[in-house]
Length: 184
Image (cartoon, rainbow, N blue to C red; front, side, top):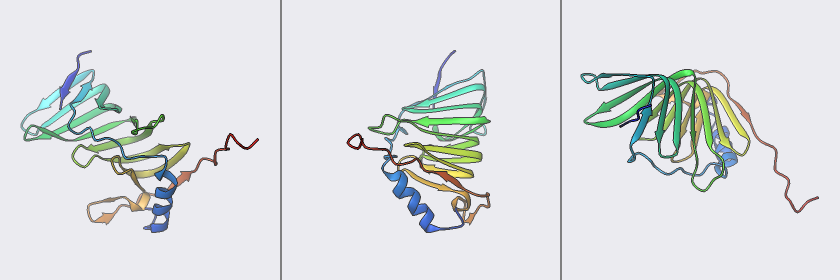
């Protein structure tokens, strides 16, 4: 294959703080890759220069640094020669990235994932699942993940614009405490 280089919980603050405290040690801030090229492989490609949109379809794989995204279809939006965002669709779309200094990837999947290359924010919609590491799991219809700051929001805490989006319940699974090697 040829490579083409281009490129809330009801507003409950306590829940958000709990997530940050619980996952904060597991998810470190990730290196920024926005200055690295984006490599895209797909079965097909269509460019609309007037709209600044390139559409990749069929077994699409996107790589930028340690970021890996797999989808059925990916739209790449550009302006002034810069890649602004990617919108991926699939059944589901898969995302993963290795945090700095960690042995485990942050993983996510959803029916739709938008990635803003400027803010480095992931917006997941439809059966969204985020695995931030350490055996933890977050599920909701909508999840946002700031991959640089390691900040997660889910459910009604996710806003698009000024108003929160109604998006069902949030479910979090917290891994049990690991037994220390000293205790036997």
